Image (cartoon, rainbow, N blue to C red):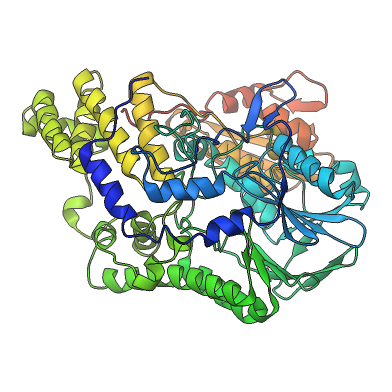
Amino acid sequence: MKQNPPEATIESANRALAGTLPFADAQDFENAERGFLGTLDDPVIRAADGSVVWDASGYDFVNGDAPATVNPSLWRQSKLVAKHGLFEVVEGIYQARGLDLSVMTFIETDGGVVVVDPLISQETAAAALGLYRAHRGERPIVAVIFTHSHIDHFGGVLGIVDPEDVHAGRVQIVAPVGFLEHAISENVYAGIAMGRRAGYMYGAALARGASGQVGAGLGQTTSTGSPGILVPTLDVRATGETHIFDGLEVVFQLAPGTEAPAEMHFHLPRYRALCMAENATHNLHNLLTLRGALVRDPHVWSQYLTEAIERFGGESDVLFASHHWPTWGADRVVHFLGVQRDLYAYLHDQTLRMLNKGLTGAEIAEDFPMPPALEAEWSTRGYYGSVSHNVKAIYQRYMGWFDGNPARLWPHPPQQLATRYVAAIGGVDRVVELAREAYEAGDFRWAATLLDHAVFADPTAEAATSLLADTFEQLGYGAENGTWRNFFLSGATELREGNFGTPTTAHAPAILAQLSPEQLFDAVAITVDGPKAWELDLAIDITLTDIGRSFRLTLHNGVLVYVEREPRDDAQLHLTLSRPRLLTLVGGDTASDGLTVDGDLGVLDRLTGVLDPGDPGFDIVLP
């Protein structure tokens, strides 16, 4: 694939940024290397079919000084995150880092081990457990703690735990209340769209290298193995709740509505150690992740950090999280938590102050100076979240998408708008001419805006698509934020090479199998093609034999509605089956055993005939 060197303006901006940051401060490097015990003998982790799901050596190129094609601040972060292997946090607590996007922690009990957040994929989790056991012996797993409801903190559990051991009570699965509902719904309801955009966010289709993907700030990228889930056997329901696992006391702090809808921290008195899940990491996190999600609440986020300081600050000699490296020393722990707390509180409070003066989200984000003391901290840098898109997220949380100006209340959609803009400017060739002038002047943001209109007005205009790819590339080279870089370079890749679809997906069978009947019906309802279903009036009763529940489904006015109730004679169709068989039925299997039909099976055909599943390869940079 054609790639260009950085333009002089990008190189100059990167040099200027480097001169403003404390690169002589090596504390993070000391902490990231502290306690290193060893790494995998074979850095390549493979699935059963031999395909590569993770290559721990894939970022070995990230060393030395930053190349001209990478923002020097992002390069520093990637050097830290690329370190892989098993690390001793304190004697009795160990972390596998650099083997997936997240970090997997092992906490030793009297005779076993509690595992925290078993990565995304079964394959990477199994490799991490094997590395731990190679250094610490064959301790049995007595519990697994899911700190929150994102897939990189539970997806690999089936690679380390046999479900039969859970059923038999030999292993507890511990999670914050609400975990299962949020873990399932996030990966199903909008999962196709999120997965497609996540391919951009993590640079899944980009080549690893100085002109390509160098990391995502929070971690390097996502593994591509098999995710799964296990239903919690213990829901943590209240802050201060304490549980004992094979002699190990764990004190929990709930923190819902922060980085995840269901999230919790915990303290380990035996080790004077505090786990902050994903609410205090070594970068500014997302308040609205670029892959798409609900907007997070920085106000309660900061309050839970304050609560953690008050409850555990004086009792913690080390702080670790489910990404990045630990922080040692009681004073440093409190300082680190205080900085993180102030970071999210400042973003929240100042955005609200300015929106109440009438500024829009884009206006606030464009000129949002941070306090010098926070600017001087490496842990506040926008490697994953950014001040720019977080401020806009806060505005969106409180005010929605509309900024109050009626001229922007009813705009044309992008392609129609682009066609009108391009015609007004004088045609695609004139737009490209103006964009090239902006490009050569180093105004890449304006060039991207102009060319976006040109490409949406005429996606066959090669001069426009080519220059837009070049523009995205330059913006990527200059981005301090890892996910911004990945978005820009992914856009350039698709313009040059075509749509790469969704390289990784969380829509796995093992996760779908945990859907409740209500979640499954919701998942079907959002695929109904409304206009095609306007004239249908259907009623189906479903009895689920394995859980003893029955539901009435109706399709009317293009809306699929379900109500839990006993079957009635007025249903056009009554299906009797198990919940797993219902899942296969929704997948289109009407022929297999385990299905009893009473009534007109054609009703089911009429329902499935108006279902319109999502498209994991929808266009992003083209109309």
